[in-house]
Image 1 (cartoon, rainbow, N blue to C red):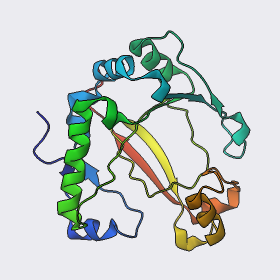
Image 2: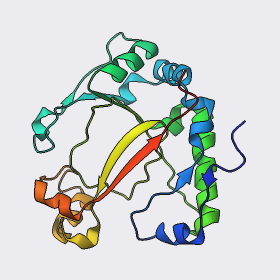
Image 3: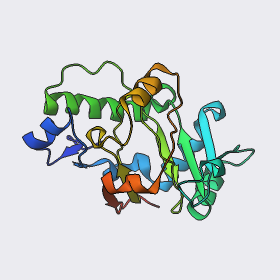
Length: 209
């Protein structure tokens, strides 16, 4: 059974930040068996391959051309998990709520708790992808559309988030991305990082085995 509350130590201040800020808060997803190695291997076995992204990349954030789309081939879930632990891979299980009822229940519980905590009314467009990434994997600079929440569950991850008010992306570019005229991937320059909110996310889970 999942914990009664998946959100942890959410204050009124955190609830207010949901509407217009980059912020970090706590959750209890790491307590769930759904994110153990065994469970991840099973979901990789069961997930439709057409909704599984398999990518590798370089180490230079300015060399987007090093990002490559791959294919899981005949590897089963356990093998995919193992090569991701030791390679330079990024797995994206898309449309998790559509394919896996046990995860859909958890995502709906999260959205329900957010509605109550933030007083934001019904959230109708509920969706979730499950990301499994290698320790050295990187994702290149991009504009998320629409706004995203990252629920970090296991291991460590460093996140760079760039506030809209910093001006690192023009209004014209944002409008073009939202309208579909431009892709979410945009040009990266190292000097943009002076405007970033940099957060180290660390979760040591007892569910790894």
